[in-house]
Length: 497
Image (cartoon, rainbow, N blue to C red; front, side):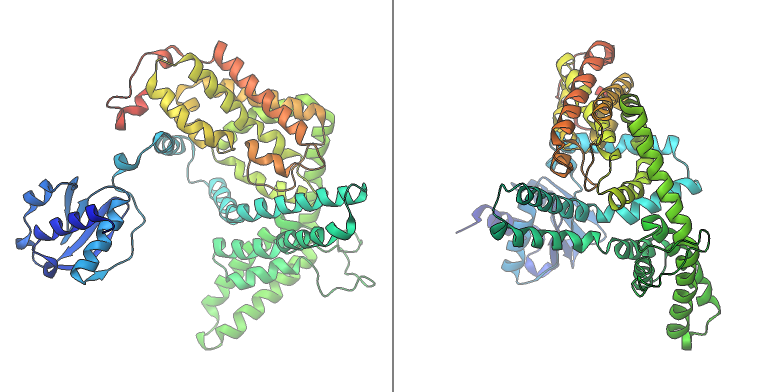
């Protein structure tokens, strides 16, 4: 019979808790079988703890939490529910026994989370600026998977278009495929402002549907091209999409204020009619005639300034941007750049800023490799590095920041230098852009526009090398090279850093 071990464990548990009749409900989390008990007096706690396969027992307000380990918990709960013909509740997605599931990566992420929280307490208050950054992150982070997926699909469509134009592939075979991929990509980027409007409404406390409508207003869908509306500041025709994501976020923030204040005065009997109508009318007019022109001027100037800096500054600008991005990530300030990336993609088809900033994470990878090479006797530290490196190479830098380089101090600085080296290489080459935001590291390679992926790879290699050399010769503190072992590491592993 399948799962014989789990069935025996389920039977042994029943024998020591008064049988299935004493169990009201059975469910589990990642490592524990949880049983709601009718009569606590029928439970033999000591014998239950002695059952083979039971790693521990916790009592919690009439519920027995029986620790049996990951994977086993779900199977034993299923067996107990079937054997006792009692209710099997849904699994709880939590892990109360980290030591039973921890791997090198888990341990690194745990330490990173703790150190990140400490850094935030020390450096980040509850200022209005910080709240604004959190709001921006809450609006755009849920869209990142869509940016990545649609960006890669759009990149494939662009490659097919280039091959068709060059005569390398048969258009009769590939044109329909290119069109289909373009349609899928357009499902995001054509209506991006609407998605942002819905997310912004959720964050600011407005009705999500109204936020989507205000995002759609930016497209000026009902305007005739022959008789366009006029920019009241310049006299020029208004352009659909003018103001972009910056305008949408500002407009929906105002929408939330208007809607909340209207609900305070509008009677409940007519609220469903009056509040959305007045909110859309007021904020819609404000968006078309004020926000779109102003936000459009701001976004155009901002993008122009960034491109000018990259064109004029070249390698120097790339070094400065690549070297200073890690501190922005450390303080959580990097989220403010997301709308800028999106505006650059909407205006230029690519963001030339992202590939340079991605070099910061590559500098950390180089620094971690140098620490690994030079501090091999420190098994606790190298164990953390082994867990953090794979995700660091893929562009997720927080484990390396908060579990490795930042706690040691000097490696954080030399990692920044490595990021500067990579940024300088990309800045010197010029016009290296990404078609979507989201990943960095090697995961960004498929999103590099215009066949410039080789330039980005050169930057990555330069950042790896720069971070490694700077750290190996100047960034390894003496305490990092002290000999440690993994025995008893557990919660003390952070002492290595």
